[in-house]
Length: 89
Image: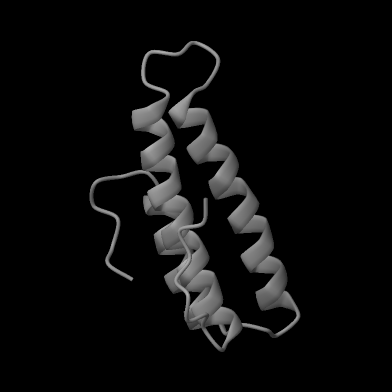
């Protein structure tokens, strides 16, 4: 199942915003669907997803695909993954 919109963004930054928002919604859906199971940890899934994005976005910034300001905005979203106060994208 994909949570990405049908009208895909045109820039790397816009694409990344959509991906992080999609993963946030997917993490919340998995938390609800897998509640009470001992073979899956919401906290672990969030940390792994945050680690993935942190490395990925810093790499895109390093090669100039996104600006420092864009990186900062993305990392705020990454930090908020799985939280109720996840910013509107």
